[in-house]
Length: 517
Image 1 (cartoon, rainbow, N blue to C red):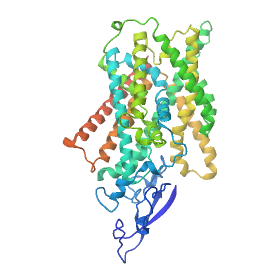
Image 2: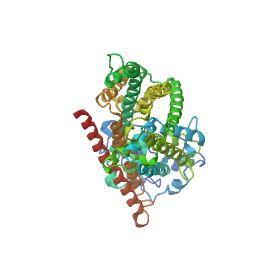
Image 3: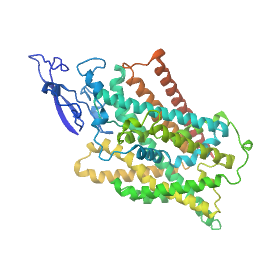
Image 4: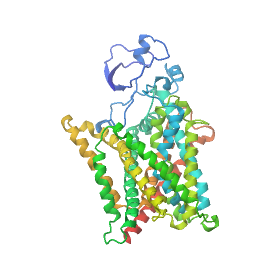
């Protein structure tokens, strides 16, 4: 990023006029690295000088002393609905100014979206149907999936509006939230840095929580196979000890700072996960009972666990902005049809398929991961358990990379340059150990998944995008006839809050019941 200085006088800047005798004052800003004259031809010197420049901040890059409430403007605000640059707002196309080294095609983005959304969550879908009932789960999964997809549409659409309005080529999730608050009502503007902090914090909690779930998942699957061969032995290794054993090698693997060295592990993980899920599905169709033998609609008290599990499995809000930013044709990401609609349609269908037939097969015996229901004495089933366990083990290092990057960018400036190297390694070790400690303390896979989904993904996937749209549409173009956008977003926010509160409460009750026994 390039630090620039804009000289402003007490007169009007937007029209290129200044007032004599006034004192100059300097406003520091950060300019994004893009050519603002591309496809627009050359401009006069006055227009070039007077053109407003806006921040293109990176994730978690602002010191604490520059948080909300500081008198130092983070961006130079421009009133919507008037001014000399209105024609530029209409004509500016942010997609033409993006400088992406290797832009992705629609097909590549579709594949990346599937890879980002299809993970260990699909193995927990039968448990979600256990908490919802066979037929209610079938309908509710499609409804929740549709809501999640729609909220992603909201986020990306608002990002496109803000990019045009502020002449910024691209934004991340936290960038969109911060800029939306700066463009919103006066009461929200002072909270712009706070909403950025909230988004980054929940992203970190979500990803760290996923890492903890991965440790529990690997530990339970490995323990089940090993226990089968050691059933005659007096040695019994508990799940907590297995989690500790698995955490040790991950400490050294997570010391790798360059993501390209982890690419081979990602390829192996994808292959093992794909083969494992295919084999698992073959077990679901052998000796399948009649649908009348399963509960159609579960008790309402169990629905929050269903909601938390489904939103954990389906929600890919953390990756959508990076996928959209890398596209060769970003306008193809949303709309109808679009990459997002097709990708999420496939994801929702696959998740519903596995959840429906997994619960139909195993009924009340359905475990937190469907792999745990496979017959442990079967050699093929054992290989599936170990294949998926190895895949999740390798995925841990990739999942760990993102929260580590966010946290490190937030604290790096506070550490002396000569201490940054070993400080980063210490942070990496500390975070892996923290994940291991949490997994050891909460080794129950089911309520853990529901808790992370209810706390983090209901916030990031539903509540925050709805608030962003309310802020972006506050003045222009408005909330529509009868304020339909307002009422629609109020409904989404309330739905997310209800899921947050009830999912968290029921998950904590599940943990309490486990510890009390």
